[in-house]
Amino acid sequence: MELNRRKFLTTSLMYAAILAMSKTAEANATVRKASKLVERILQGQEQPIHVIWIQGQTCSGDSVALLNAVEPSIVDVLIGQVKGVPPVELNYHPTLMAQWGVDHLEGPEGPTAQAWDANRILEEAARGAYDPFVLIVEGSVPTEDQAKAAGGFFCTVGEKDGEEYYFEDWLKKLAQRAAAVVAIGTCATYGGIPAGTPNPTGSRGVYDVLGRDWKSALGLPVINVPGCPAAGDWQVKTIAHLLLTVKGLLPPPELDEFNRPTFLYGETVHETCSRGVYFGLGEFSKEYGAPFCMYALGCKGPIVHCPLNKTGYVEGVGMCTEYGSPCIGCTEPDFPDEPLAPFLKELPTFLLPPETPTPVAAPASKGAAVAGAVVGAIAAGSLVYAATKKGSSGEGETSE
Image (cartoon, rainbow, N blue to C red):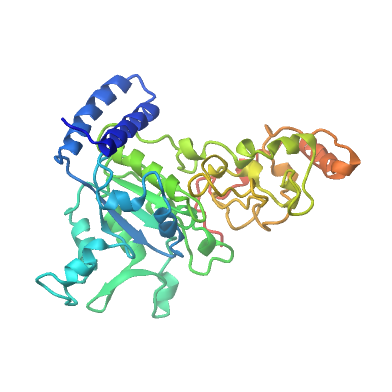
């Protein structure tokens, strides 16, 4: 079989990804199976995996972030330029639906209202027309009871013949058939800003709606990829892993207690921050622009799990603490409420993880007073900070 440069590189990258993620005794069998899959893909014989992407209460920031993914870009994926990975067909996305564009307008049905009825795709997906498909959810899920009682609604995905397609109802319908369900962004994962106190719409995350013990058609729980918004590359890496899982090439990604992939969210911002050394030295920035630890300016990095310092936001660039901003904890279940709020207020020291290094005393000119306070609080406190997190008890995470 003849390979051009693009096919050679993408095929090599696929093998590298398989080898990197297959840390099991069955790695050799996985590679052998992958070899057959790669050959089918390159010969155009592999059937696509379908993606249904629905949006609830969201600013669409995660969709915008997805457009900034670079390795590969979402455009390359959707127009079929990435030949060395399982083919993907984006069947439904409220703002990215190529099949409903100019080509469709010029088709035999013409620009009729019926031809443009995107609800038809959701109906077909619920009946199994796109199996196997991955359901991606962006945005929080409101509780409609109060709105219905007042004669209205909070969030729909459309309407047909005067009937509203409530977001929560269609989330549940589609989840029944999905091979995997991925919640993208903090609103979809934990409720996010819409669920912040006083939570007027009763917003929740997807895994609170479906249930913490819910399983997809492949036996997978809801996979959470939080961030406000989640970086495009985090989204692509998680979805790529799940595509290989759907194909039977990889085991499901390992998840933490909040269903986040540990290969992305396994470390805290504090652990990966280049300014972290200053925390141990007791050197704290007291004003923006100073090069020291941002703890005294409200950084929540010690209790926040986020890969941003390792991955950057776009092409390895863009990291909150690296560029002098405190981490506000947007990947955590509590966001935007306490203990992450107020965003620019110093984190209560009794919430610091017990394993956080105790800062040593520093000269007065370098923040001895702040360092001394941190030392005293850490020495006196042994509470496990995770117990304060929303949802750690297994109950709902709505901040009402």
